[in-house]
Structure formats: C-alpha cells, structure tokens
Image (cartoon, rainbow, N blue to C red; front, side, top):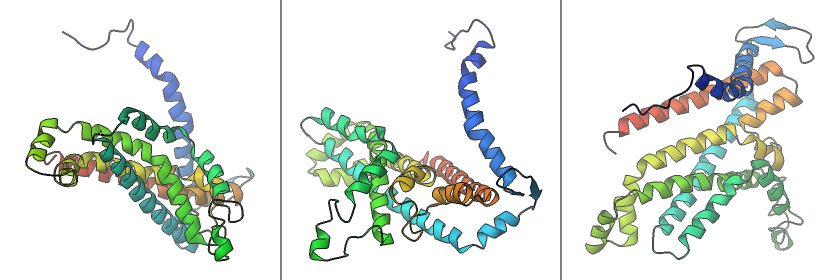
Length: 294
C-alpha cells in the first residue's frame, strides 16, 4: 500500500510550497547572497556606485580591535546564556519527573516565556535593572555605586545573559521533558528497588540517556545566541557600556545602519555565517558519532 499523499496534479505540491519558498528566498537567501557580494566591494552608502576590492573588507575587520572585542563579548554571552539556560531547564525537567503535584500546570507555565519576544524582555528588564528605580536600586543606598549596569560592563553582560537564558529555558525544557519521559519506567523502578535515590538515578540513568537532547539543546542555544541576540541587546544595552555587550549580531547592525559601512558589515555578517555553518557541521558530526553509543 502506497502511503504517499495523492495530489490531483504533479505541480500542486509545488504550488502549496510556493508562498513559503518566496518568503525564504526574499528574507533569507537573497539577503545572504547580497551580503556575500557586498563583502567583496566597497559600497557607497547612498547608492553612488561600488568598487571591487576583493578581500580588503575581510582584512580590515580582521585587523580591527573592535571585531575581537565584539567576538569576545559574543563568546561570553553565548557560553553564559547557554550554560545557564541548559542548567535551569534540566533542573526543572528533572524535578517534574518526580512525584510533584500539578505537573501538567507547571509544564504549561514553564513553556509560556517562549512566546515573549526578546525586545519585550529587554524593555521590561531595562526598567527592572535601573540603578535608581529598579529592583536592585536599594543596594546603592548601602554601597553607593555597587549596582550600575549602565556603567559597569560585567553587570550589563550578566543582565543580558540572564535575560537571554530566560527566553531559551522553555525550548530546552520541552526537549529535556520529552527525553526524560522516553526513559522506560521499569528501568527507573528497578534502580529505585536497588536502593538508588533520585539523585543517583538522575546521574547514572537519566543524564546519560538524554545526552542527545542535551547536545541538541546546546547547539540550538549557541546558534540562537549568535543570531537572535540582537533584539535583546538593542532594547536593553545598545551594545554598552563601552561596547562591552556589542555582540557580533549587534555589531553588524551598528556598522551597517548607524556607521553606514555596508561593506564592512556585510563582511562581518559573512564571518558570522561561517561560524554558524561550522557549528551546524559540528553538530551533525557529533550526532553521527553518537548514533552507535546512544
């Protein structure tokens, strides 16, 4: 029996996919092609022509200290937010696998933050971390200047990491909950009969068996931090103080739309694209190597 869907005409599936293909082409493929092309040209910002310069744009950004400062901020932001989001989501998912009341309600509550846009989170958090009227403003009454995220780069980065991790916890929680529920109940019951407590069962049984979900969540979070951190940074810190939170995604926007350096921002976007492609290939390699062990 043929399980494939039957269409009235061979072109009908292509017709159904045409709107999505147009969206992908207009908003993803075409901008990527233009960025690659512009990275080899010196493009004038007001449409007065362009001149081919080869790899000069790449050499210029690779010899610019601001690029390495932005790369360092991106790595700190990515590592911190990924580690925090994975840890919190794993703890929540593991706790709900115990005999907890209202588990279904709690699962729904933990998923809700995924519907909140990063820009909204940034605007709300900007009010909450205000050193004069925010939640931690009372610290400055006892130790003046101890809480000043608008002046201290480390505090601004911590706030940024916490906010972005909060947006990534729901997706990680879904992945980990689904992976934990796939573990056979007989296996967990046998371990409990043998005297293994919840912590020992989590370390020896649950954690190794959800390793693919951990890897997938980590890679997704890293790619999200590289690509989708712009909205949060723009709403919360605008790359400051002192460019300490100007991650690569925000640096591309700042160079291209504020500094009007279309060529440099295009080259920087290509570099970011290469980072993402490398991460994706690394993910596929780990999954292929782990298929025999998981």
